[in-house]
Image (cartoon, rainbow, N blue to C red; front, side):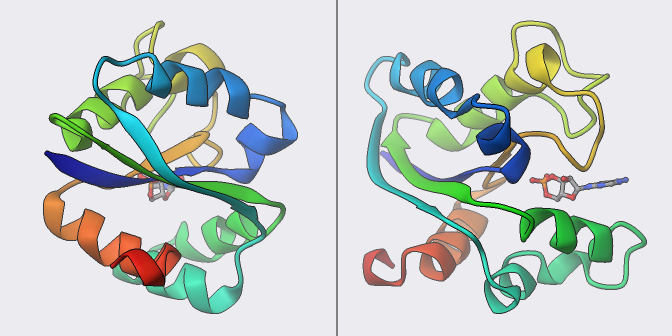
Length: 136
Ligand code: CMP
């Protein structure tokens, strides 16, 4: 059994897409949401979460965007959930994402790509500690 950290970004919350996205995750057999929170993220949290991107040209606008409104953070648990949520999300650039995926159905620009999902077991454990310290 795996667990992963999923964020529904400020564009998803602003556009009223959180129910649709959560529903797609909930409908996968055997997966469950075991923690869920809505909050606006602070600079410290964002610097920890996106530390690996510091110095890249998209870093500052990304952090500003991620702090621009509330975000839904979740822990999702289940079989192969790390790869599975990333498949549901589609590739980072929404224009490359297939219709049927979350980014493919609802996204246009790379920064505002609706959803984040951990990319490995190591990232999931690191990210869960940042967003849900009590669940680390
Ligand atoms: P995610 O994969 O969740 O985490 C890194 C985020 O940085 C990514 O989603 C996008 O929101 C953003 N990002 C990555 N590459 C670019 C890029 N080239 N231009 C703008 N934003 C980017």
